[in-house]
Image (cartoon, rainbow, N blue to C red; front, top):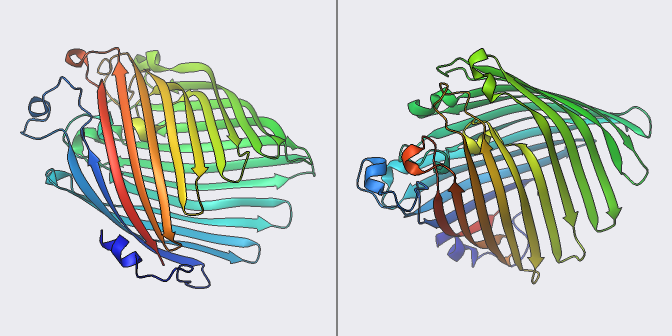
Length: 399
C-alpha cells in the first residue's frame, strides 16, 4: 500500500506539527473484502434478486483525505473535522461513490457556571444495503444543527437545556418517501455531589415529518424519565436513564403504529489497568433512524467493547453485539406495506492496530454479522435473513 510504504520514510518522531499542533492533516487508504455486499439471504439468487448478473461479494478500496482542527481561545474552544472519501469497487462499478463527513463546534464557557456547545454535522454516504437488500445505491445525506447549555444554579443543582434540528435526505427516488425532518428539544435538572455523581429528571420532545411520504404522515414523541451518572470506584463509571415514551402519528389510520411504553439504557465503563478497558451497554429503546431508514423499530440488546493494549504500539479491540428488533411499522409507507416482524442480529468485530511510527497507523479488522427473522423471503417486503463476513486493512498517515 502506497501510504504504508511512504510512511516508512517518515522520521520516528512526532507527527509534523501544524499551527502548534492545533491542525492535523491525514491521508488513509483502506481495502475491504465483503462477501455479501447486498446482505442477501443465502438461498436467494443474486441474479433474480437484483435483476442482473452479479456476484454476492466484492473487494473495494476507499481513499480518504481530511483534517482535524482544535483551537483553544481563552476559555472557549473551536473544533472542526472534515473527511473526504472516494470508494471504488473492483466489479460493482455502479456503487462507486464520493462522500464526506464534516463537523464544526464551538465549545463555549461563560464564567464558572455556564457552558455548552453550538455546532453542525453533515454526513454524505451510501445507505446500508442491510436495509434494502437490492442493488440500487442510495446516497444518504444527514445534516444536524445543535445547541445545548448547562448552568450550575447552585454548587449542587445543574440545569441543562438543548435543541437540535435534523434533516435526512435519500438520493435514490425509490426511498425518498423516507426523507425525514426532526426537531428535538430537551430540558433536565440534576443534583450533583462533590464526587461528581449526579441524578436528575429529564424531558425530551421530538417532532418529525416525512416531507415526501405518500401518506404525508408526521409524528410527535414525548419522553420523560430519570437520568443518573455514578462513579462507584476510581476505575469504573455507570451512566443510565429510564424513560416513559409516548409516540403518536398524525394520521388516524396509522394509530396502530403509535407507541406508549417504557425504555431504558445503562452503560458501564471499567478500566482496571492502564492497558485494559471494557464498556458494556444494555438497552431497550426505539432504534435510531440512521440504521434502519426511518422505520419504527424497538430494539432490545446488549453490547460489549473490550480493548487491550499489548504494547505501546499494538492495540486489540473488539465489539460483541446481540439485539432483538421488533418492527412496529413504517409510517413513511402506505398502511399494510410493512409486515410485522422480529429480527435477531448477532455481530462480532475484532480489530488490531499497529503504530510503527507516531505518524503512521496500520489497522486490520474482521467482522461477522448474522440476522435471522420470523418473516420468510417470499412474504417479506422488508429484508430478512443474511450472513456477511467483512475483512479490511488500512493505513493512515497523520501530518
